[in-house]
Length: 279
Image (cartoon, rainbow, N blue to C red; front, top):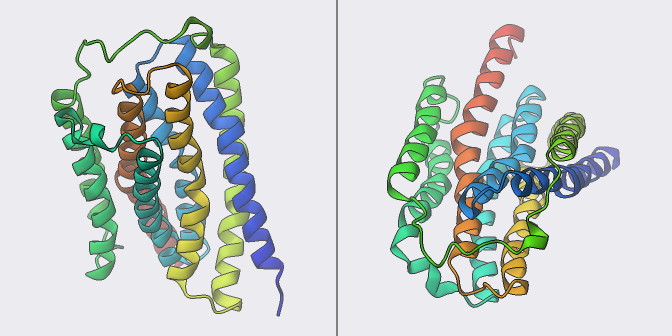
């Protein structure tokens, strides 16, 4: 049995993680510091950025003919992300902060983002064309609700970031982020093709391949969740709500981006490809 597809799959996934962690997230870090983003804004943008691997995997898997594996990547990633967030909260003993009223809508949207792909797959509706505008609309609703209900109030929780951390290089951050995105896209092409070969040649079930991809593509969230709380602890701000605010926005942003942006874009590409090439 040829083990090369599995090897390429692992190496490509590892490359995506590397470029996300050391390229994309570092670029966002520089941009956030240079532009003095709030904890909320930084968490959301980080969440969107850590959904890039899922976007690349879904599109490449769909084009390679293994849509189900790509969609299971999204479903499993959202489940794993939620578990990782809870693990970071428990590890840093900040579980009580999750019950703050200002976080309820974010937790609700994160949970809905877990349920949506599972329900659609269970009902056999996961490749219907009308899901594209519906899911995009779902993301718009999340953003509107988040802006209107979950505003970060001016309070002692929003303490100033230490001066040594408020330094960022905007041009460098943009260049690093864009370069990382290009590298991630290239690695994603190899990942999608190798995943298709693993599913077809090695007879691995699509959902199992999707869960494997889900574990791999959730590593950036694992790193970011724990890094947020660790940085807050080092700054002596572990009991402010800023760390939980940023981590929750990271989780919700990532899960909602997976369902409301990655899913409909990947589905549109998949359906257009199937219609164009008849496969």
